[in-house]
Length: 376
Figure: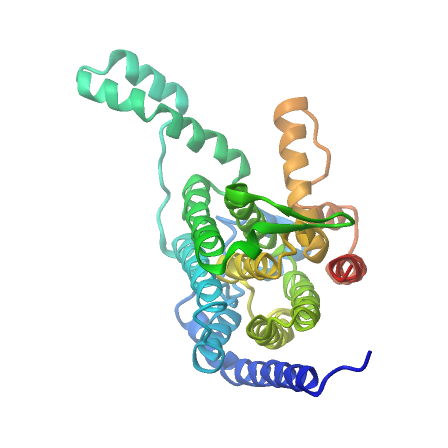
């Protein structure tokens, strides 16, 4: 079936969005690098234990928060040239909310002071012996929150500085809830039907709300976890958002097609400066923001169940962390030499370049499979 002139025009415009985004990002990247160096927003070994590993010592002093290049470029170009009250304002809003959370964490890791938190045993003791009965009641009522705080420390590489894991998860929950509200109440009944690979569509009703929250939180954290080697997250995100251009264009989701093209273009510029030896690194400001944007775009395209394929390497890294935690705290064994997975291969003797490029190739293959399923 021949492709219509209108569809070709949309694709041509999408490519133009990508080119402009890339050029704009390339132009202002040197100013961002200078800004990050000036304010010493760089990696320090006291909050990143991996910097003690052999060749990774060279990363000490490399600027973080390079993800601002992508986040700001996407937000500005979308606001001026692709603002759609129905389809782009919430994805951009949630992306910025997640990026602000990540940026605050990045800044606190550099300028913040070590934060103390009471251990669970201390809380239980205060419930029994505190001289003020009102404080005993308060500690009793907040005990579930305290349990959540302490168990969430298992997921943290550095619980003492910056935003703690339980705080991140709570704010990510809010970001996911905003997305769920938008889909459930604003987009219409069609979006309550979730595409299930090889089966068709299932109407989820209000159950779509926790499903959306789950995928937004998982994907944001998955991209964040994968951002550990020069070029790994950036190159993988280029592959993923390029796939989203194809899927959204075929579905006729014009505004989302342009948004994905804008993200791809900005990521090309970012990855150019992030290839080893990196001039800057993404930081939480970029990984959390782009992870949220990836999840929302897949949700809008009604292909959220394909996120483990379209975002394969990110979910693989997330799974490695979960398995490592389960092995350590439940079975008392270490499944990998270090989690996330890219550090496991690094400790097995793979160079950073070898690990990153092989992860790119594996990711590209799974993304192609995801595209095939998405177009069934």
